[in-house]
Length: 221
Image (cartoon, rainbow, N blue to C red; front, side, top):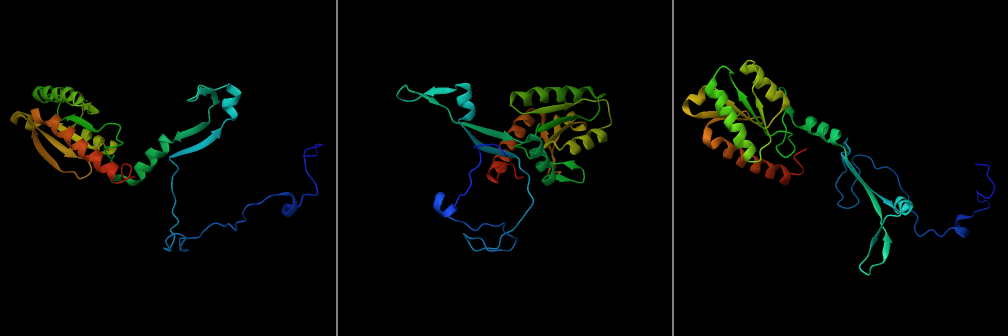
């Protein structure tokens, strides 16, 4: 402000500025008809989990950032900014996917998809079965945790539900029958499966679950 040769005076918009189009804009309100389909608009709160915007060539020109085009001529690159709000994305998932016991991670975005819970660390057979499954699941490309804490089974189950890991494999009494229990976090359904088949069963279910998550729109957030 108050600098010489900085401001223009006596400007007439109609005379001095070429305006291609004038628009009368205002913020819409809930219930107003959509200009495209005519249906009433719904105004909802949302979370920005990512953004993309064009930076242009300001910074690339300053840095001398260029590429060769198809004719071998140097061209200054056009820059863009791309951001993902990891924390906000997690908050959105937690807001939608939870129950009174804790989080319920969709398989597509879960940090770990399976937890192996050893019911009792004093059960050598259960410990051995859990360690075998841990190796087998890693071999199947499954992100897996092994809960081998010396704690009560109920505490481990509650913690697994609180964290929200999609699948829990319990190595407990069923190991005596060469089986483990497979529990789905979202539904609570539990079934017994053979120890030798458990890793493949979990891997197959995760493929199906992730496919459903993606088809229903980004992990059903």
